Image (cartoon, rainbow, N blue to C red; front, side, top):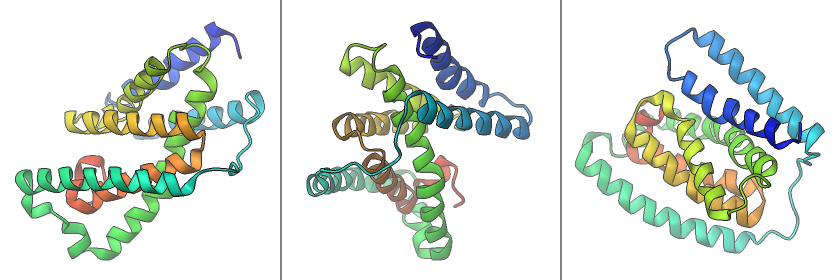
Amino acid sequence: MKSVLYKATEFFIIFILIPVSFAISYSPWVKLAIGVVGFAYIIYVLLKVENEKFKIAKNLNWKLFFRQALIKLLIIACLTTIFVWFTAKEALFGVLLNKPKLWLFILFFYSFFSVYPQELIYRTFYFKRYHDIFKNKYLFIFINAIVFSLGHIFFKNSLVLALTFLGGLLFAFTFYKTKSTLMVSIEHAIYGCWLFTVGMGSMLGFPA
């Protein structure tokens, strides 16, 4: 399971074949089964093959992390607020103002049941398994952003693909520097929750 050929085949199936197949119309129950089996396989490989320890790393610079995350959030907030104002003004902060309970529920559900599994797959698993295949750091991170975007192809929305590619770059650089699934999950949750809050949730598959 550690040979280059095995990993290359594994990479193709998990990060290309399965996401592309989810964009094709067939039974959602079959898709769910594929997703569950695939996620179980990833957890198995992390625990039994890569000996990954799911614990919070020590000596993490949380102060620097939150400072940088806040700066990036302010930039994202300005750009997305302007975007929603000009493209869908009626949606601006719509869920927050009109359905605050739904807003809180979505933020909780998204953070714990969507963000963390995504980061286990696209950062923890990806970086652990394929770092020895892609020798160039920037190519490694670029491909991570590409496959992260491809993982959202089932939305069939070019804006979603663009947003997730940019997000993938941010999260990949964060994980590359920190090696912390917790940190990158928090960052992912912060930006994702903001997008839902500002009024872009419908394009990301959330109830609006």
